[in-house]
Amino acid sequence: DGSLSDLLHRPMKENSSTRQRDSNCPTALLFHLPPTPRSPGASREQPRPHSRSDMAAFTKLEDSPMFRKQVNSLEQITDELKQRCSNLHKGCKKFMGSLDEGYAGDLLFADALEAFGAGRDDPVSVAIGGPVMSKFTTAFRELGTYKELLRSQVEHMLSERLTQFINEDLHDAKDCRQRLDRATMGYDQAREKFVSVRKGTRAEVVTGLEEDLHNGKSAFERCRFNLVHALANIEAKKKYEFLESISAVMDAHLRYFKQGFELLSQMEPFIHQVLTYAQQSKEMAMNEQDKLAKRIQEFRTQEEISNLRMASNVNTSTSGDGIHVVGLQSYKKIEALMQSTANGQVEIIKQGYLFKRSENLRGEWKRRYFVLDSHGTLYYYGNKGNKQSQGVASQQTAEPTGVFSRFRFLNQKASSQGDDSLSCRTINLRTSTIKMDAEENDLRFCFRVITPMKAYTLQV
Image (cartoon, rainbow, N blue to C red):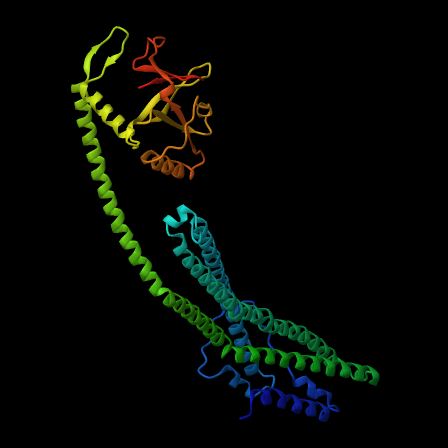
């Protein structure tokens, strides 16, 4: 009825007293038979089921066939438990690896989101909602921290304890079995030598063999009970070690999801607010797209009408020098623009693309955007990185005002986002001469703008 410790130590005291009492009777040592060695396939045999605790079988610790059978059964269970622990440890390592990858993935995603524009105040980041995304970036990093904490808890509470159980407890039982096998062999040899003593052998020889037999038995008993203690330790830990570890892992999961839930619950009003804002922005963008589509349709319609009117107003006959005659309606429109200019208003007369011949030896033609206003100033645009836009115009006027000023500012602001920004050149037509270029007989619609400093060859 005593504890396991009492069961283990009480017989050892009795065995010590018995050995002292029977020290004068060497033949008493012969009845302690060595344990039966395990067969090579014993570890592969399935252990029998136990309805009671295996440690209850050690109520009697005398060396007997029943005792050896119980020890072998516990060793088989220990071997199977070692294999199970190894498989569980492999699964635990893979689970920890997945958590580690998840933690690294959360941080990489947060970094990518931050590089995308979260937390930045540049125009592009503001347009895509970067200041709003900064809170989401912080939340992803915080969730990643929770995942790393879960990984460390799984490692500490399960992986390390499994490693300790395999490398210390199970290995200790195996080591005790190896020491017991060596002690059994020594005990067998000492007993065989003692029983083979002939009658009439000298007393000192018999005394030496008797002492070897005592030492062999003592080592055997010590190793036998060390094995019992190692197996008892494993049987005791089976009842709480794994349940405690797995329960601690589940508790760590509970705290992991609870922390994540609390974090996201605090952000829930903000998330709903952002979703509402995104939905409103989507509706506004759709409306703007519809308006843009209508404007494009109206613009194309007006262009077609304008082209038809221009075709009806232009005299198809040309003079001998190739100059086209402009219709009466166009002259009236020009006069109206000049009148508005005299009143201080600046309006755009015409804008669009023309081909401009470069000044290099090859004389390449480049497509440039030109704008003509009612002040008689012609503007054209080009990329600063291109050679054809690096030439300086003959005369540059002051910064324009009015409609064109806003147009030019918006284009310069938009182009500054790219690698190549636009450059604007001006040509003062009031001090220039416009001539049809007779040298370009092989091309149509060519003319020259001759300024006091240089000449521009253009093609409509």
